[in-house]
Image (cartoon, rainbow, N blue to C red; front, side, top):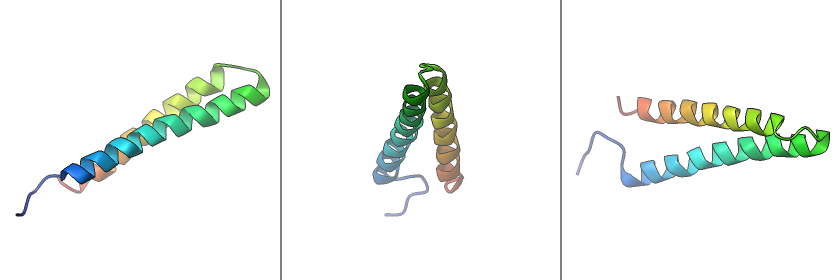
Length: 66
């Protein structure tokens, strides 16, 4: 059975990777904030960078199927 789109395992892997990007971005930002006592400045920056990284990852993965 040949399909042109992503399979369920591909989509589940992408979901886990998206969650990982966002959590790691926020976590690193939170650690920097905790060290510098500037909460929530770097936590928000890390969250934003995690979201941007997740967007680039999803674009790269779906580009394979376009």
